[in-house]
Every structure is written in structure tokens, then in C-alpha cells.
Length: 261
Image 1 (spheres, rainbow, N blue to C red):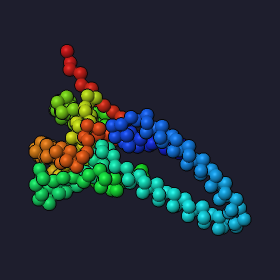
Image 2 (tube, helix red, strand yellow):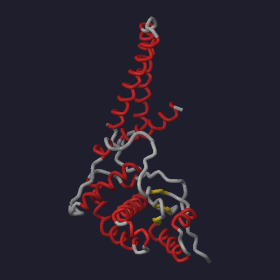
Image 3 (cartoon, rainbow, N blue to C red):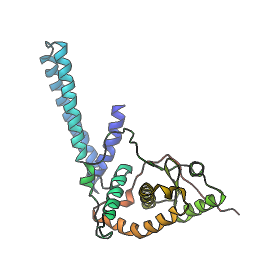
Image 4 (tube, one colour):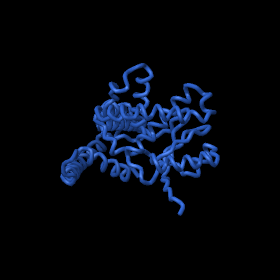
């Protein structure tokens, strides 16, 4: 399990390090480095095992846990040095929340520059523990789930289908979560805009809970998104993020709208 997970992560990291150069060259160097360090590791492990063979079990377990903690700490620090230039779900949440917080403090929307990849890499959580948030955002839900969670009537369903066809996404506000359904033709930028819309919607609702019960909340949020999105897009580009490579974790559903003949 560890080897499979490490191999999957190494693939993405090697692509990041290649930065437009030949990925096969990076993989070859990585393989050679791994062979050398693995060989040296076996030698030192054998010497170490022999040197601690006379220690009592209590001291040996303490040494084991101490070395394991140092190993994990070193890996965490190394991963924080890898500054991916695209937005996943956690990075998108950090960037969107930071941008909107600065707008709320009165900063000019066109002059705000969001945190760059290097800064966000130290804020991004590396452990996959569930994070409890008010109104969590669910990305890539099925259209059926969207209708059920948001308790849509016939008119609302028709409007949602139209939004998916026109905007490539639709965001619904439910009792316990915000749901996003995405078109199968949505681009990475469309997905980023959908998450930005959901983040604005969450902030608006959490500021005034009474808006959650009104249908006008989407009209208000739509106006805010249309006004702020061009500024946000320029801001993330100035911070060296690449929106064209956005990769959000989804629940696996994409919606296809077929016009009735």
C-alpha cells in the first residue's frame, strides 16, 4: 500500500520538477537516485541493526518511535517544499477564502494578490483527516442528488439544467451542504469558477442565516461572482497559479444535457 501510494505521488512530483523539460530524464535520474540511496540504506541498516542488538527491548522501542517521528517530520517538511502551481480542492479553498476575506476588509478587488504556491504549500493540510466545516462544499454530485439535497421544484430543476448547459456548472444550497454539479464539457477554469461561486455563497449565507431560506440568495451571489471573478482570475495569475490545470476532488459525477427532439 505504501509503495503504490508513493509511486502515485512521485509521478505528480516528477512532473512538477520537470517544469516543461523531458519527463523521461527526470524519471531516469529519480530511478538512479533511488537505487543509490536504497543500497546505502541497506548497508547502514545492517550496521545499525547489529549495533543495537544488545539493547533491551524498552530502549529499542523508544529508539524506534523516536526515529519514526524524525522520519515523518522530515517527510512533512520535504513535502511542504513542493509548491505545485495548480489548484486542488484544499489549495482552492485556501486561496478563495483568503481572497474573499481581504475583499471583506475593504481592499480593492483588482489590487488583491492571493497567496502564491510557495506560501500555500505551508498551509495546505497533508493529512486526510475529515475537516468539519459549516456548509461543506460537495463537488461533482449527481444531478439527482443535487435536486434531492436542495429540494428543487420543477421550475428550479429546469433552471438548473439551463445553468449547466450555459455555465457548465450549477451550485445548489441545501440544508447541510452546498452541492456542485458539473457538466461533462466543463473546463478546469469552469470548475474553478464553480468552486469560487460556492465559496461566495457559503460566506454570504454564514453572514446572514436568514438568506438561506430565500430564493433571492442565488441572484445576489451571481451578481457578486460576475463582478469579482475577473479580478480573482487576474489575481491568481499574478500569483503564478495555473487555472487551466485545476484539479478538484469530486464525487465522480458529470452531467450531460441532451436537448429533446
